Image (cartoon, rainbow, N blue to C red):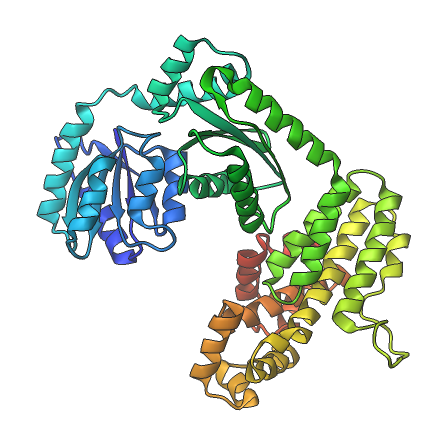
Length: 484
């Protein structure tokens, strides 16, 4: 059987292609095709191609993120025998020209009839059966053997020439890049490879929490380092990372570049203090101006490396951090006026925490409070009408408010307020209110023995079952699982 990936940003087209694919039967024994998956964006397509390694891809050109041709440019050298069928809503000669060097098999113009779809499948089937099945395996085996074994030692000219031919490497020279990531290795590896591929040819592999890139090009090492480090800082904002970049060497001597990159990475890993300071600066700069999940990721990048070492020393540093954040958000100590009102977050409580579990519980509750308040207090960058609407929502989310209620409180039309949400908050009214309700419910669960039904009613849900489904969709677990 041959696996098929369908890529299109229109749900009806995905459903139609899937239906026709499942309907196709070559003989009485059934279909020679099986559906490997469906993707709606360029990034989803890249991820599925690397994961599923489909034999046949129906690729729409105009998809969100990176376009279909750019996806094919990224994967073509690794999967040169994959059959690609392009589809678009209109014919363009320039796109057809770009597609030819990528080995694109057929160029279809939507809408595609069932007759045309079946005829295309028949032609693709002939093409697939005429290609040696081993090519994928040869490429993957060769890449892993190079990146995990042979590139770490001096190679003979014959061995290096063989790898260049097998992997389609365009240059006799190369540079090694190591990137160590704290989470989501596969996702970020693809993002880094995508960015590198805009200017360079690269192959990559991963082991444990580290990904390794071979950039095959005779380039200026200093310029490459400057551009690459800038690129990594821009795209890895929300995740902890270290990198090491080796020098430029000919293929047989690439082991020098490997060792140099690894040595640099190890040295940077020892500089935990510098890593933490950078993330603290980013956190203080961005809290209240970025989505809550991004702020939480930055916060995790600060405390996780600290608490992996001395617990008491880490607590002292967290007291200092929360003191700064409380002052940043509430102006608790920097304002001229004084107040006897208790602060919503008391950093001194940290010193009484007995273990890592207690720290995580305390941090989740109190950092959420800071983020929620910061999103309001730092909204001076937002239009006044949006600030008024956010304040109204924060005070009234537990009752059945609608977009029109918030718009009335802000003295604007619902349509205008909806545009403000999309432009400044990158979300919509319903998702914003839902996030507030679910976060408050989570806080209630962690601070009290409240039941699921009581929590649902407290945050504005009349149906506890619907509340539980919404909670799981956002938090990944049911309320009952969280309570346990």
